[in-house]
Image 1 (cartoon, rainbow, N blue to C red):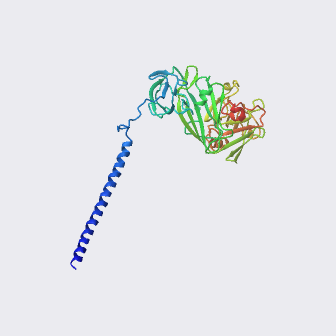
Image 2 (image 1 turned 90 degrees about the vertical axis):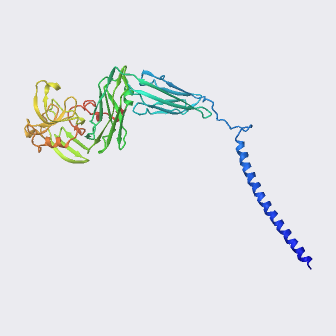
Length: 415
């Protein structure tokens, strides 16, 4: 009987020893797994090494791409057009920056094949430029080049004298008119350097009158409220051999309300239309039968409260010399005005044409009475307003006689 408990006790002791061994084996297995995992990471790290276990080296082979820049570094008296050339061989350009000392960048475009970069416009004169260009070879390795050069200092220059004035508000017929101080022999280069834009946008085209005047206008009169901007990038433009522009300026103006007045020389009346509605019908006296008024669309280019009109200045000899013509508004370079007339009898207005080609409205000497037709029209008019003359026994005014390009067909204007 004692044997059984002793045997059972022995069996129990033996069971405890086997359980402890199993636990130890479990712990040892976990440690082995951990070591194996760490060893695996170490093996992966070793894979990044070379066969001998050394660290892998970066590719320090020089790029095969070669950046080329003309003119050479440090060059002086460089031409403002055609001299700047940037390219790449055995690779493609990825970055090109050309800037002046103020940080203003020259806009340009990298060719589709990456072999060259072309500036969009000419360079400014008397300016030092910095060039930074980068190219990549077929392996993606970069090659860069940095240079500087200075453009020429012109001995002879020109500017463009423009109208209307910056910040002004003008009528719907006002063109942008630029008169150059030197005759231009490369009109394409000069016109490319001038940008005229409008908001709201409208097609705007330039037209040359001779070699020293360039006007811009849309097909039809500007819409009231339009904002017009003129960007003159003439600095460095070679307008004629050895003569360079020296002007870089931006001006803007606003189109005011719409006012178009129509003078009927036969009926001897002028109807004033404001924003599509007639606001006045004024009796006038136009050119006499021997000195008729031009027909056509004319733009008010100047307003003078009082001025002198002398027949000698417009080919009429000593036929008249009036020192105090009131409320004068110029319609042509050749001397056509719409103005106040105090020396004619009141009965001529609306009944008889008596002038030397101008359009006269009743007025008083000195122009002090704001209730007269001439004073009313003067005060209601803007430079740039349109005055149309019809039914006169005369020819249509030439487009370049004043700001009167509206008398040229649009297709002809664009040629």
